[in-house]
Length: 333
Image 1 (cartoon, helix red, strand yellow):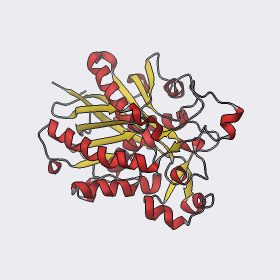
Image 2: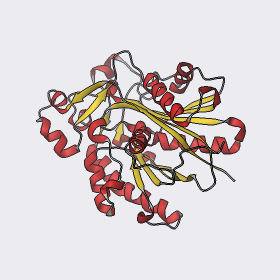
Image 3: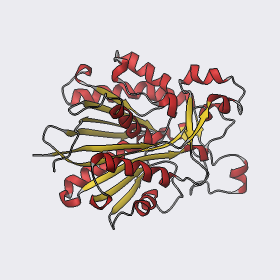
């Protein structure tokens, strides 16, 4: 009996590199401070003509090529993003059009940095319920630069733009997704949000003047949630399957910042070689973090056929997710 798993990954980061020196110019800090306290050295910025859907479509093309699949074989597209092209329609509809996909089911999921794993759960459950669907594309994408205040030290130093994608389909027995666990606590929504632009506070001259269309984050509160929730997510996922940390080949978290992940890894006693960290050169790319990190681990040889991988994410909302899978280099065709 086959399972469902990831058979291809791809990532796309914009060409423009933004250094710490450029970010620091808008803040009252030295460039070295940014790397010292966050671990981020540089991040990418989308060009003026690039929207989230453009980055997402390119990552999807690369994932399809990696899986040896054609867009005509895709029966579902799920996009995780908190920086959509527009409030409506869904960014997934834009991606569908860019890829030339057929009249298939497409949707966005709004779970911020946990959006990719939420999307993976949707895709897995959809394919299990409708096995004739073919394969699914799960994409995470963010264009945070359009929503940043360059004078806000809490956010300007951290966030980057980028996209990552995965192909999900049937895989051989003993491979694929073992479990995906999701959760949220909406009482923590004020910790990180874009205050205006929605139905609660529609965009107006007043909200624009106040900068309320930009990301506002309580960094201390978010750090406390992450420092508590990341270890808990890992422990719960491992206990559910009766395995230990030593049974994992890789831990692939979303990328809040390298220093936060260093604390997490050290707290678990995890060998740094088994913790995939890409934030030094990408920054926090939200829902794109995990698929981009998977792609990086595949490219550097750490992610191999049979690798047991734990993925973890915490996002605005606050939302969180974990997924355990055994990697495969090919589908059950």
